[in-house]
Image (cartoon, rainbow, N blue to C red; front, side, top):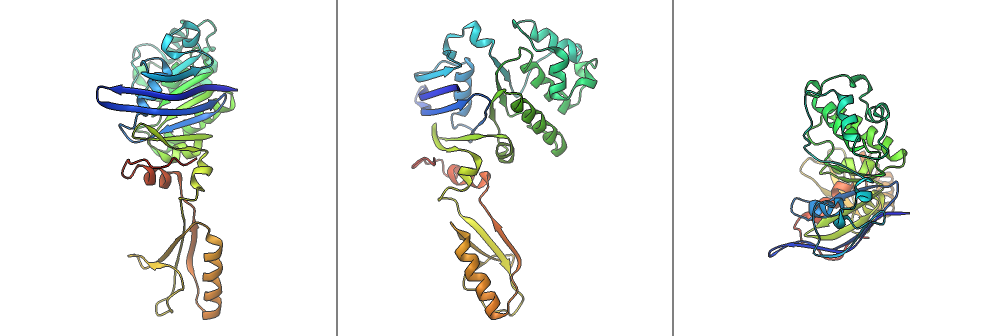
Length: 301
């Protein structure tokens, strides 16, 4: 089943064309990451999906509803976790979630919401006493208060240390396992690579690439790096250019022939290939390649 369907979405602000014909689908129960540099149009796109901003043209459907109409049934199915949320710092954690859930017909039990985000032990703690990571988890609990099937997460781990980020990832993975559809925006490529089933990268208001992280990493435009070192005085290898740090590197689409050439040469010449590594392109490599000059050619699919 499809939770979100977007076709030829467009939005302009005067002469600035923020969104220029974006199209994509999000399946139910999927973790979907919408990525792009600042000004690429992803925030405008998400706000249109959330029903907070009107579109100029195109088709948008969320669980069969047009977000632009702001119908109550649509609102009841959507949870939003913004970068900054304002809740009463004098309420307890449990009181906060209970209060926000009162506006929904079938709110998630407070205890279940807190367990999902790892705040059960803090249920009676006042909001003002929470740490930064705990406060962010409370934001997610607030987004879950109405038990929505769809949750928008805007930069959920900004400012987190590595331990807190790992905890947040576990929480998001738990929500996905529960069947919650999640739309994630983040500037952390590792986060998107770890969590997302599918990714759309937006550049200059258009879709530059879409697919699973694995599909984007393995696309023919992205090359695999083979790196190695040789002992001082060893003959020059048949492949690879020497880097500033003394290691050799060769970039290829298929590393198999390159490895065969190098290992055959090394065996014949009696040379040891030290620190031999084969590194596939990461999602961050793909992202940087596509956003380097913000000039879109053909989308990667």
